[in-house]
Length: 167
Image 1 (cartoon, rainbow, N blue to C red):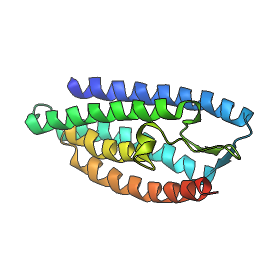
Image 2 (image 1 turned 90 degrees about the vertical axis):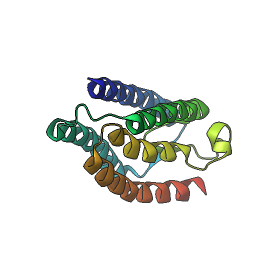
Image 3 (image 1 turned 120 degrees about the vertical axis):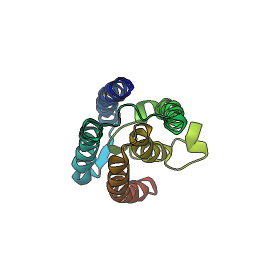
Image 4 (image 1 turned 180 degrees about the vertical axis):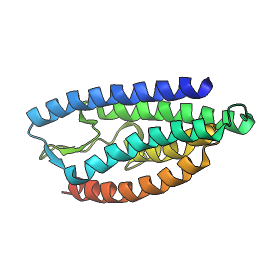
């Protein structure tokens, strides 16, 4: 039961973030923002969709319904801390936060909140989430496969974003 509660909460959170992202996209475009990296964005959406499908499938196939122990609960606590960090990132970027890459020409980069300490705190959160969420429920295949796939897509995305932010 815990699995379905956690996954439902995370899916609802992601859907809410897509609503926020769309609202922010409208504002960004009204400010003259230019979108970059649209050619790889569809792969990010596909990766995250398949991630949730994999979580649910592996959980239902594995039969590990009652194998939770202190380590699993430590992963759960870590995942909750990641959600606090995620909210900090969203709050720090405000209307600039988006699931896509936008840049308003001449705009100043945000350097407050977690951006004071890290260049890409949102990606740190995403990397940790994709590894941690499956491990709460002993879903090792999903953790390993999607951590690797996410690393590949983030390599492309961060390279694109860095190029844009340096201009």
